[in-house]
Amino acid sequence: MGFGKVGSEVARRAKGLGMQVIAHDPYAPADRGRAIGVELVPFDQAISTADFISLHMPLTPATEKVFNDDTFEKMKKGARIVNVARGGVIDEDALLRALDSGKVAQAALDVFAEEPPPRDSRLVQHERVTVTPHLGASTKEAQEGVAIEIAEAVVGALKGELAATAVNAPMVPPEVLSKLAPYAVLAEKLGRLAVQLVAGGSGIKSAKVVYKSARDPDDLDTRLLRAMITKGIIEPISDSFINLVNADFTAKKKGLRISEERVAVDAPPELPDLSIQDHSASTRAWEEIGQLIAVPGY
Ligand SMILES: NC(=O)c1ccc[n+]([C@@H]2O[C@H](COP(=O)([O-])OP(=O)(O)OC[C@H]3O[C@@H](n4cnc5c(N)ncnc54)[C@H](O)[C@@H]3O)[C@@H](O)[C@H]2O)c1
Ligand SMILES: O=C(O)[C@H](O)COP(=O)(O)O
Image (cartoon, rainbow, N blue to C red; front, side, top):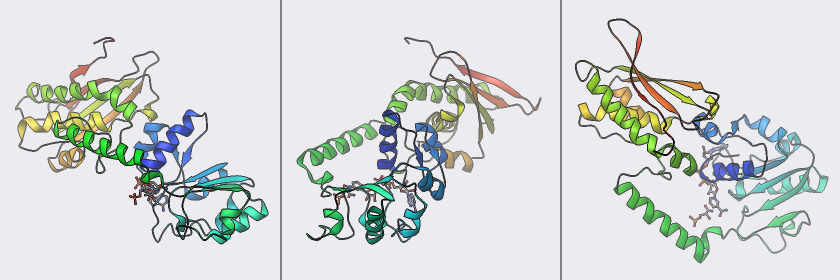
């Protein structure tokens, strides 16, 4: 519940353990789920089908005590719940009732409505509750790790490298980023080449990008490549600076329409082949103007 930075990392690890993972997050884009192979589902479906429910949403008026008697009632008998988000998202009295009745088999809690929880807290003392003291970020190791990560991210961003941790850009998981990085450079070049090949220099108004990949089309996260192609098409003919944050917005503002087609291929390459097609004004058909093909080892 809550498919942001922490929730999506938990999902990736759970998938690594062989679990089937679904997520509920009213604001998460479908692409984010697709990138990790997680289905985004409505709240009721998530709570009524899950064996383990892990909470990663912020505490807001909409999430306050969202886990209450009604919610626990809708869960599977014997479900287990983990709360490492904020104490207030669970009605603690309702959780106690659900634990006592056996509806909830176990709870693991790092956060509480009142912190630290009172010594005589029944939740803390409950035999089927595991508690930790909400200090993950306060250890020497975590503070060092955060400092190093921030420094590396800032240096990388200043050098123009692709950032996996930008808060205002679509998140691309590190392993996807490392696979796509060489393609990102090529995608930008293909965009630039397309501008030169199309008569009139600034003539591209709509482009179609075809991705051929052995990945299931639903698992192919194309935001990064789309941004780089947009960058390649727009930057040479304007003074706009395009990045992952503003690519879609700038394309729209400039009247550039980029449509995408995902084609599944049976055999490797695992990485996508890209081709850019321009919508020809004269023939009214899509005409291929460039293609990228993966060459293993290069
Ligand atoms: N226990 C700890 O030490 C610890 C450490 C880090 C973060 N946290 C907490 O964990 C939570 C998640 O942190 P994050 O860094 O992943 O934040 P995030 O902002 O990256 O993700 C939060 C996600 O929750 C989603 N969300 C908002 N309203 C929702 C709703 N009604 N239902 C479901 N999802 C909803 C948002 O769309 C977002 O994707 C926060 O509450 C944060 O304070 C706790
Ligand atoms: O609970 C949290 O969100 C994390 O532990 C980070 O908390 P902090 O930013 O207050 O250290």
